View 1 (cartoon, rainbow, N blue to C red):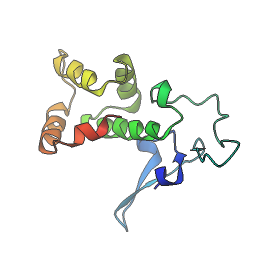
View 2 (cartoon, rainbow, N blue to C red):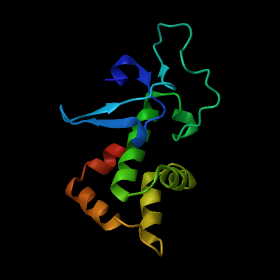
View 3 (cartoon, rainbow, N blue to C red):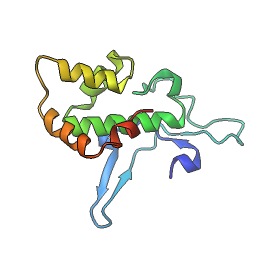
Length: 134
């Protein structure tokens, strides 16, 4: 829905996603750093926040792709049971390449807790990993 309105949230992470148990839907909260990319406007609301540190690569930080990348990070955090800072730091270290990150994680001497379960989950849903990559 946000993309159809040309809005980028820019801070999608597990703490900004809540579950509406009555309707069984996820809800996004905290739009304080969101940006309106409506090309009809002469001023883009939200782009003046220079203090915002995006988890997305710089080339997509203020685009709709930033939220897609953020969702990929959230899924990785949940699947692999990583905290946000660890997951983000590790993915930045490999130049935001999810395949390189996964390969590095698989060849690491110490396998993170939950890795085998997450890999099984991904193997049962073959298209999911491809969807996570921007």
